[in-house]
Image (cartoon, rainbow, N blue to C red; front, side, top):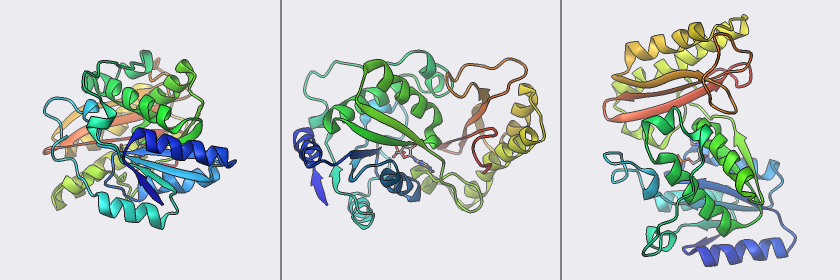
Length: 285
Ligand code: AMP
């Protein structure tokens, strides 16, 4: 496994792999790798990639004022060891300086699908994500890129970007990896106290209740949202949203729907957690 700190060196490695007849696979991350990230790496093989690349970059552009950029966990040595153990070929570890040259003033901005939910609660967040991922796609070149459905809206926004801008990249969404008790794995879970960790299960509980109702034929959107919201309201300090949306456009739904994803974002103390479940598609938490 080689580690590449600059976009040029990483691009050369990906070009060389393609030159040798290999298919490049890409897993973009912010590091602090856990079993969720590593499941995406494992998926690369199933997605046909035989040159496996992981990027590790805490992207300042996607953090808002007052968010956790400074305290975001950075565990590079452990991350590299995990990648090595997983059979990764290349790790791209750029610095903010070599991603964003002096005077950087270009922005990639996806409309529509990025506007509600995370987009509304974290102004500028998706522009930061799409700008950095566009740069990662340029550095990697033609490839298959695997993203987690943990960040469901992000995955849909990036699909849109790749289609609209004609990136030679196949965007794949991988199911959420959870703890045995249903908590979605997240680099931010380490911020939770034992008491908060227990309360955090309320999200999985709500998503399970909505999934169970869906399986029994419930299609009233307000009812499904109420089932998901109940436990979260009881346990969390503040809710950003518990909303059902159209799985592709993330648009609001009519009163009854035949396809729906329920998305949750809520705060416990200083920690913000997100989760979701596409009803009838994802296994319930
Ligand atoms: P992050 O490092 O948090 O930016 O995440 C990097 C990638 O890993 C994103 O595509 C996330 O959606 C994905 N990811 C993070 N946590 C999970 C999880 N629990 N299950 C599946 N994918 C995940």
